[in-house]
Image 1 (cartoon, chains in turn yellow, purple):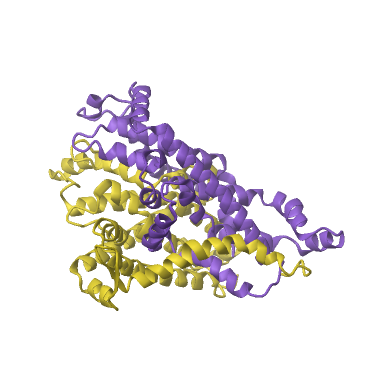
Image 2 (cartoon, rainbow over the protein chains, first blue to last red):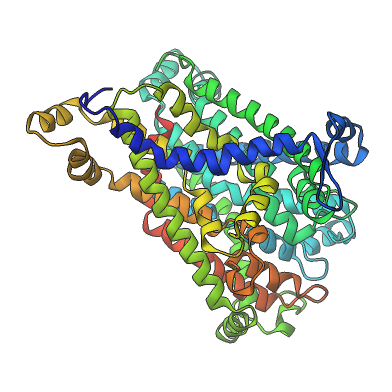
Length: 293
Length: 275
C-alpha cells in the first residue's frame, strides 16, 4: 500500500482535483436539494420553510404514487427481462463453439446507442401507420395499436427500447463474469453427475452473483435516470401520464410547473432508493464471496 | 461426437437468429434512410435499401444545423473523457501508492459520485450555474462531470496488481513518485485508458438531460437535442427517411470509438468484474 513513504502532501494534491469537483458539483448541490426539499418557492423567488410538508404531500399525492408504481414496474421489466435475455445470450456465446469472439463483438454495439436513438428506432417499429410491430400485431389479432393514445402500447415501446439498448452492456459484463468462473468447479459438478441445468443454478449462477448485482444496480440507474431522454423525446410522459416516470416528473415539476421544493423532495427520495440499491450491490460484491474465490 | 455437432449447429442457429432480431431496428432505420418519403410509407413495406441515402443525409444535415451540434458534442465528449482519465489516474495513484491520513474518508467520498447521478441534484445545480453565469458555456457542460467513480475503480484495480518491486526499485534509483507515475505506471495503463475513453465518450455523447437544461442558445446545443428536433418537428406523417438519416449521422461517432477500442473495452470490463 505505502510504496512511497516520504511524501507527506503529494497524495492530497493528487486526490484534490476529484475531491474539489465532488464537493462543489455533487455534495454541495445535493445538500441544497435536501434543504430545498423543506421549502416552498414563492412566485417571487422567496423561500418559505414548510417542514416535512413536501414529503407528506408527495406520498399522499395519487399522481406521485402512480408515477412511483409505473417506475417500479418499468425498472422491474428492464432488469428482469433485460438481464434474463442477456444472460442467455452470454451463456450461448461462451459455449465451446467456433466464432465466439465474433458473436461477443457482434452483440456489443447497442452499448454505443443513446436512449434517445433507441427510442426513435423503436417508435418507428411501433409507428401507428407503418410500424412493423404494429402491422404484425394487427395481422395476428386484427387490432391496431397506437402508442400516441394507448398507455399500454407506450409502456411496451419504452420497455422494449430500453431492454434493447442495455443488451450490449449487459452481455459484455455477463461474458466477462462467465469467463471468470473456474472451469474445474463446473467439471467437478459434472463428474458428480450434475446435469447442465443443475450445474448452472448450483455452481455458475452463485459465482456470477457479484456481476448480477452490479448489473442490477446499473440497470436500475438506467431505468430511473438515463431513460429520461427517451421519455422526453418519444412519449413526453404520456399518454395519460403512463410513462411519466419519477425522473421525468421531477423535471416537469421542477422546471415546467415551477414547484422546485416539491421536486427537490422527490429527488431526495429518488436518491434514497438508488443509495439502498447501491449499498446492496456493494455488499453483495465485497462480502467474502460465495465459495471463497 | 454427433450429438456435439448437432448441439453446436443449434447454438449457432439460435445465436444468428437472435443477432438478426437485435440488429433489426438498426437495419430498419437504415432502410428508411435510403427511401423517399413516399416509399417509406409504401405498402407492403419495402425492406431493401433504396437510393435516396445521400439526399436524405444532406437534408437532415441542413435541417438542424448538424455541423454545430456535432462539433459541440465532440468537444464535450473529448474534454470530459480526457478530464476524467487524468483526474482518475491521479486519485487512483494516490489511493494505491501512499498511506495518508484521511484516505479512509476520501476514498468513499470518491465512490459517492456513483450514488448521486446528476438528475438528483439538477435543480440546485441549475440555480448555481445560473448565478455564476455559466449557462450556455462549455464549462457548464464539462467541469461538473470530471470526477469519475468508474475511472478511479478501473485504475485502482489495475495499480493494485502492479508488483511492489517496481516501485521499490524506482525508489532505490532515486526516482520521484511523479516520475514513477509518468514513466512506469502510465505506459502500463493504456488498456485502461482506452477502456475509460470508450465508456466516457459514449456516456457524454449520449448525455441529454443536463445539456438540455444548461443550454438554450442554438449554437450550444448538442447532437442528442438535434435528434429530438428532427423527430418532434415531424409529428403526424413523420418524415422517417429524414429522421433516420439524421439518426445515422448522430449515432456514428460513439459507435466508431467503441469499435476501434472494443478489445480494450472488453478487457477493461473484465478487470472491473474481478474484484
